[in-house]
Amino acid sequence: MEQQETATSKTPITLTPAAINSAKAALAKRGTPNAAVRLGIKGGGCSGFSYVIEFEDEPPRERDRSYEFDGVKIVIDKKSLIYLAGSVLDFEKTLMRQGFKFQNPNVASSCTCGTSFTVK
Image 1: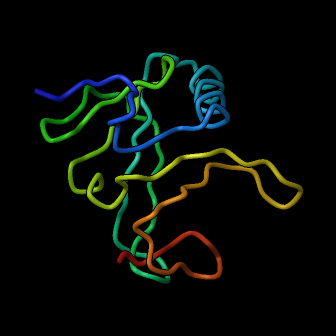
Image 2 (image 1 turned 180 degrees about the vertical axis):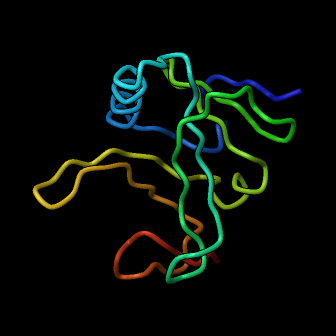
């Protein structure tokens, strides 16, 4: 059974208000406001790992951890959580780019395109 937690000071990842609002808007636009957002990492990219942010319509898997931030459900698998612990997920909107951005203390280096990274 998955573990459900609400955001607290002990939550291993933090979402900024901008990230929460953007996730709510994306879920509403998609027509699935009660779905979750899956965060994770996968092997690949220029530097070895890349981030995963996707909609999750299915119930959490057995090894997932679930968190809730102001009504936004977040699901992270245990393996990804190791590399995402301490991260802050933000949403930035600039003239050049718009999207979610991880501030991850576990990153040793990242590629120049900013979409992949290596860990410490």
